[in-house]
Image (cartoon, rainbow, N blue to C red; front, side, top):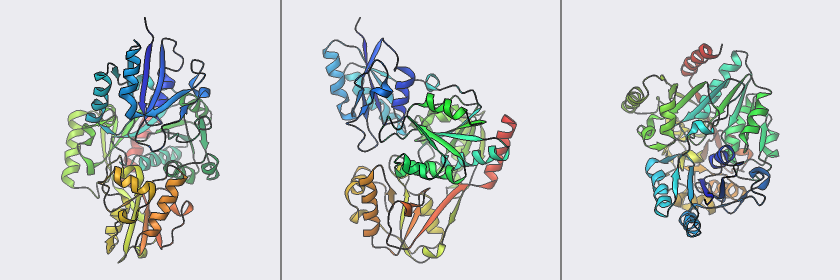
Length: 442
């Protein structure tokens, strides 16, 4: 009987984890390729032999998802059965089945692995923080959970959802404990946005590619592991408490997106974030969905507390607002903390940067035309960071509002007055979350 050929469709994260957990050491199947989408410039590489294991001495090619139909046809023409394994996140259910239809139309099986079968069991207690969409406020919830555990006298160590966009061998296992580690591992802006807030609190965060190895290393120094999920993916670790963050600015998405809907149905605790800037009717509609589809989960309504470093740079000024990139792109948000802060602090006008955008930033607007009058802080590589800097400095504005989780001034040179906007889970919501955690783990 012919050996099954496997194609894993992904976006440099969940795809590698699914391979490691489900296929790496199997002799009855052959993974012939990964395909890539969502993240720029990750196709054309290889999943290296050093990580792929004994069955793949040449590594595994990473191709463009546009090649999927041809890949399946080639294998079927050779008489091989083919499995296409869907392995990325923050997409509609319709999108998932469109990819599935391409696979099946060309003769492949279409597989959605169970998250349970890809979860690593830890010897330490685990709390997972996931979301139903990118940009719900998961990272600030993770920080609140970490603060609570620290107050309980427990050392919390976070494991971050992977963002392996560089040298995959070097990114097998990464430990971040000080700011210099960000440079050591050549982090992108997206990576720094997630790791730096943990470091600023004096805490350790792990990331990389091989999460079995990462988990075992993190266990050595942790009392509790926190899965700091990303891109609304499901947890890579089997959790004792599953916290899922929801966004009332996008009520209904918790039912329509993959695998956010899976997180929604698995949750032990819902954190409905941003209630202070959302339509109250949408908040209540979201509450009704929680009670209907997952009635056993606890519900916490949370404000996202926004602080501005220097409000005078906003008041009465024509401002360029720079927001978290993935939230605006595949997260599909039309506003972020910078927009809210600008309106609350009396900005005269939000300036549209699209006409002066350059290079990869211009391409981002073309790919995501509904971003609107905001600048996504894209920074997946050196070229994109330079394009971001050029776009900021070419925009005709009085000042710049920086609403990324990092100090963007460390990365780009901004030739205009600017101020940072930061955001945390409200004290009241953090206290409610802390009460649940103490009951579970004390």
